Image (cartoon, rainbow, N blue to C red; front, top):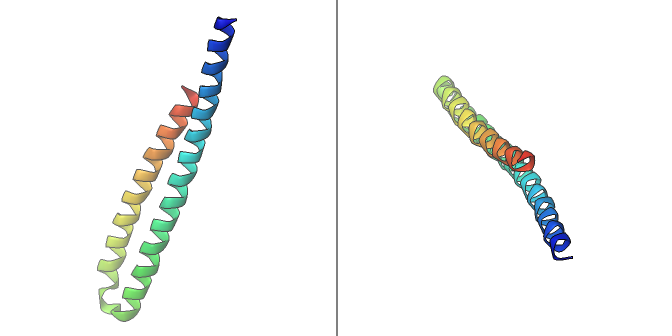
Length: 85
């Protein structure tokens, strides 16, 4: 009876861990989307105010968006590893 109780507790904690990992992956994707949206909006606004600097603004925007996507992909991979393992 005690062994069954221990097995059930381990299975329940694994289900909670998988649910938490899925929740974390979702939050990472939502956060990245919001961050990239803010970067794009701010870049368009600054290009509209100063069109001659559009090349510099665009390149900086792409670098910042790539860094955000990299962090988001890292978080999603970690969450997926938590689900699998």
